[in-house]
Length: 279
Image 1 (tube, one colour):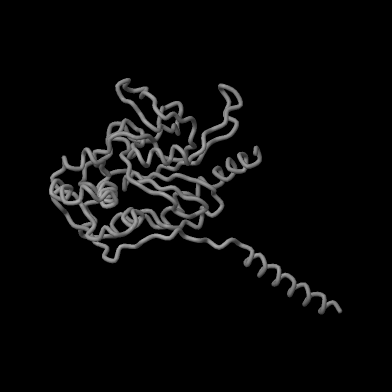
Image 2 (cartoon, rainbow, N blue to C red):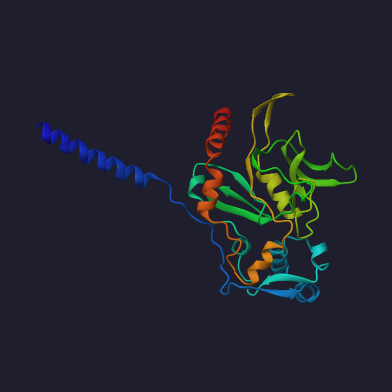
């Protein structure tokens, strides 16, 4: 009798385990168009722009690959261009499409200093990515875990009152660090903030959550987690130029991101649960 009970228990446990596995939601990646030919080559900036200036999709990819905006693009002598521009922008930038360690994280923004790119993930799935211009050699962007705080469609820089910042979202209130639209010259040039193309700044502005204050001095609920990681070689050539010889030179692997995320995941999930409990 005892053996029968044990056998039934084991079968029940196995069935329960199988049911739990079946009940787990299936991870579904967004449909994306992959380029047929994946390689890069150097081109004359002005000549390439004149040939493709009416094709906004190709321009967006070229600007992102060179971490630059349209105004500054033609100021360069040469630029790095994919030989096949038919794919979606995610294929030309370095972040992985999936990060399993973020399965339980509803929203997160990650900025890579070495590659000068950013990405958003929702429950481990890459949902948006683009170029950035982070802190210069003198005014480096701080790294680590932050949370979005307050935001403003237009504000004036606390460092220079001639700098008008559009779609500004603060992530470090005391130091005045945030992400916003501003010139992308093709290298890290900011005064510690995270510069974005206007379309990207506006997207993050609408997508991320603000903090919730209990009073003027007390944060009740933190906003969307933001991780800034790595360092930039200011004395070397632009890293993305390596793509001409090695298409995987800048790739950020899932395992690399897991190591960066691991020390922060517990804090992120605690703050996330606080927001959910307040609803």
